[in-house]
Length: 116
Image 1 (cartoon, rainbow, N blue to C red):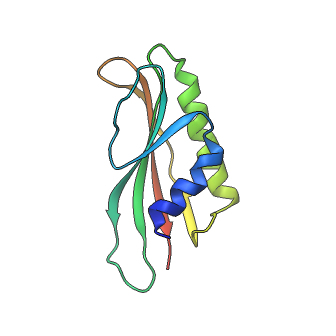
Image 2: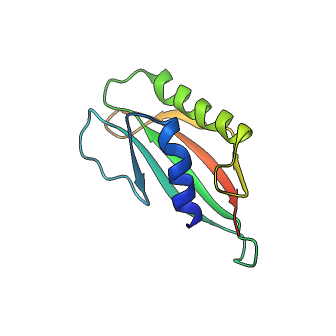
């Protein structure tokens, strides 16, 4: 299992009702919530790998700002308690909330992982 797959599996139970996507945000509806896992590199791949990601939480149009912020806090707190199938997962402080160009609330969380 790749680090991206492990991160996805870690996030699924934390974000019920959010459409989890990988790589880029593919907008299907302005009424859905999206959780987009984006790889952003990491240290050189050796025996121990350290891939890094950002998690972009995008709420639906007209959604309360606090919903994406609360979801971000849930993810950050969960990483403090468990790493799932990864050796380590660390979430940094969320950035936002900000807004998409069409006015949807958005929060971004940098995430570092360690896997073998």
